[in-house]
Length: 220
Length: 253
Image (cartoon, rainbow over all chains, first blue to last red; front, top):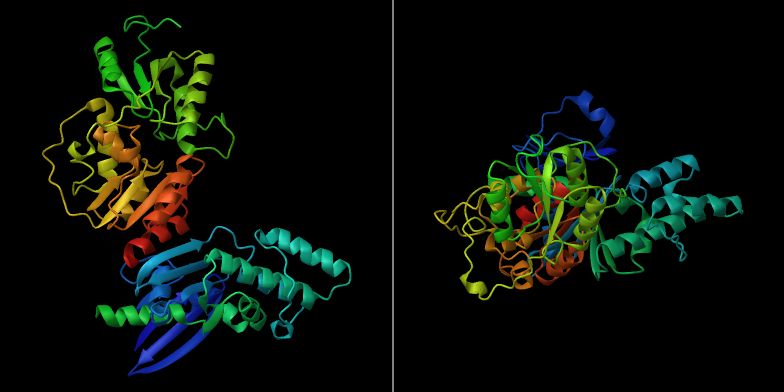
């Protein structure tokens, strides 16, 4: 059996493979240590970078989304605390960026907002209005102002998420096609918001572990 | 201010400089003060941060201030390039240092290379570790040793820019990384030559580096876009994400 893990700030994605059978799972990263899991390859913010088994997150993203990258999609991963993208041209690497300096407009903020206002992510609907979240902290202020004036928390958070989607689109330099990786794939309000700007394919939360596996197979 | 002779004050034993003062000027001061220690003020020696500049300011200029004031009692003269070979900030700092009682010799080294095809770059093109290349080139401003014996290697990557404040970032690159930008212009002996500074091998994946808050950021970004390289600006110490970005670029290209 081979085990690949992507230990993000909040969630750890795990892929176990044996005889062509794949088993995916997700656990809170805070529980990872207690599992004493022995893994073959890993990536993610929450692990020590043992160069024998650790893979750079952008490289894992590129390997996991290779098929789409070669079809001229931008691969964008929006995580709990960071955002990164890779772009290929003519089936070769062209561009990338990675912003891990500010987590005020990423997944962890959305999770906190949902908990704080007791809102279920499934109840969020695309809203054509958006807050500017160039700085997420200012975006949070707008949510509070709107809610104080009687706007529902669902509506306010939806506008914030639209702002994050617009921000992600700008961060990736306004591409025509984006394949998206990470927890935001399950946030339909985000996906619908992003679709206002470009073609979107959600790839799910396991792109990076798939990338680890693909590279492992290639190098062995 | 009158310069002190070498015997005037036993504590004054440093010729300080930044950037690349002309060889003639360096040699003049080597002859005048043969026993003086040469100190490159651009480098971070971890002296106390005097908060002399605003917080959001070029780290290299911060280093110049911190180093100069920490070593003030030992500095004989500061050789201060202030032209296009350095930057406007250096001009202002040189004037401020004068006001603060330093003996400052301002200089401008904007000579154009008459024939760029004839410049010799044994260090930039060698197989030495990138950090060592940069250290040798900057030391060689005053040491002036001959490195023509170094063998040229086929490069796989390029590094464009100035010597980073934290040179350890250079350990991320393979040895066969060729130097471009201002550091290459230094080795060539023409620190203010636009053509040398902006030249890169367009077939080589290149990281375009500048210190944050340096006016070269615009040039680095422009060249990175033009040559599809990676633009990166770093303040004092590189963040993990900056390191990871370089690492990913080197692996994916």
